[in-house]
Structure formats: C-alpha cells, structure tokens
Length: 352
Image: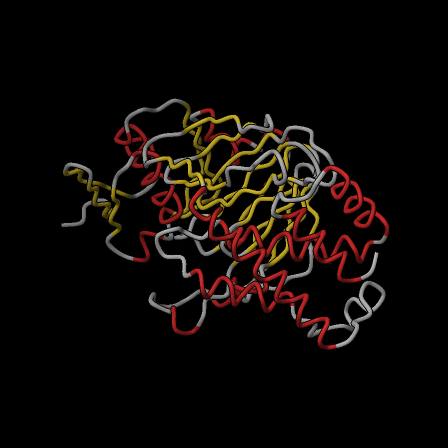
C-alpha cells in the first residue's frame, strides 16, 4: 500500500467505517513495524481525546483545526521509515480528505458520548460492554463513546476508579485518558486516581502491568513509564504560572515522579475504598479531609496550615457516619471539631 492508501485506511479504521477486508489490511500494517504502531496510536488517541471533551463546552472548529495539525507532514524525520512524502499537491489533497472524514465523524460522535457519574458519598460498580468491571469512587466521571467495545476500548476518567480489564484483542487496547496522562492496560487490575482537584495522578497495579505517558497537548509530555504488580506510580503536576491560586506551592513535588513498591497487605490503602475501607498511612489531616469530603459528602474546614499538616495512620471499615471517623481521629491527635449540617470545622484541641 502507498502512503495515501494507508492514511485513508487508518481513518476508516479509527472511525469505524472500514470493511472487514480493510480491517485486516490495517491490522497487518500496524503489526508490520513498531513505527507503524506508534503512528497509529498517535492518530487513535488524538481522535478519542477529542470525543471525550465535554459536549457543552466543545468547540468543533477548534477540534477540527487541532486534528488537522496532527495530520500535517511537519515532522517527516520522526517517521522516516514509515512515510516518504510524495508531491505537495498530493499531500494537501489527502489532508483535505482525511480532515473532512474525521470532522464529519467527530460531529456525529461527539453527541453520542456516554457518561457515568457518581455523586459524593456513593460508590458505583459498572460492567462495560466488553466485560470490563469498573468501580467508580465518589465524585467521579467516566466517559466513553457509543461504539465502545467494537472499534475502541478507550474511556476518559475524571476522579478515581478501579479497573478489572476483560481480555481483549491486541489491536483494540484498553486505554484510560485523563486530563494530563494516558494509561494503557497491559494486564488486568489497577487503580487510577485522577481527581481534577488533586495535584497528582496516582495509579496502583494489583495484577498485570500498565504504561503511563503524558499528553503533549496539555504540556505534560513524558516518556512512557511501565508500572508492574504491587507498584504505585504518583506523578505531581507542574501548575502553569497563571494558575497559581494557592499560597506556598510545594516546589519539591512539582512535576516529581515517584514509583514505590507496596506490600500486598497494604494494597487496601489504594483500592480498599471499593470495599468501604479507608486506610491512611502517615497522611496529613488535609489529605484525609479531602478523602472524607468525597466519601461522606461534606465540606471540611481546617482552621490553619499547622493543623492541616498533622499526620495520622489508621483504617476504617464500613463506617457509615463521618462523626465516628472524626471521633477516632480525635482520640489519637490533638484536634476538635464542630459539625453543622454538612459543614465540619476542625480546630486544635482547646482552641477558643
């Protein structure tokens, strides 16, 4: 196949327009060389990243322009063995056809994005059409398109989820997109935490393996990192200068990447939430408050930074009332609290 045939087939494959014969040709082409697979992955992920944008705020013209830019032959050296660009006129004509095809498909599919949303104070277990089991933690959202399980197994997560991936074909990988990073499943069970209000992404592999890489379009470019069983990867975001709305940012942790080993007995610290367990190990009161707010649908106010930095270790199983949790923490740390409706004020013991 020449370059024009390849690109048109890739478009039809990604958008679900390919015939069975064309599907087989694409699969053969992808498996023929690692650079073919890399190029396909770039187009595949750009397409699906566009689809998972919020329909209410998406700008279709911007999305069209954005995808156009990914198809421009601006870096031929990167795929030198993949593509030898022909005449300029031919490339321009091909670009126009490819862009229009994607844009038409995009306009149709953006309206078919499905969302599973979980409110604060609740946990939800769902089974996707490919058999994958997903537990969604409180205040989380999972987006996917109507053709999930057919031509794609890509989802978009905001919040926290535990994935138990169903076996699938190699040419339809299971991919979890977050705002800043892309996680590819190479195994079966992993936890992924990517709340918009957190300053980090965290993934914990229970079984199998995952790879994590940054999204270039969000200025989080990062080489692919592989996370193996009983490993935890935490990536601290580097906030943009104009987004510094909080005081005294922790410069030490900006853009820091941490990989640590976890004993099997302590995995519940990362995935125990789906079994109604909360486990904290040397966590600050501020970190604990963030978890409790989501779990119990409350707002917690800590009176000062010194108090927020108090550290605590402990675990709770099937505790339906936040006041019972706070009472246990109070028994081990120098805090007091007042609950007024859904608002909890935490102060130092004996503060007036």
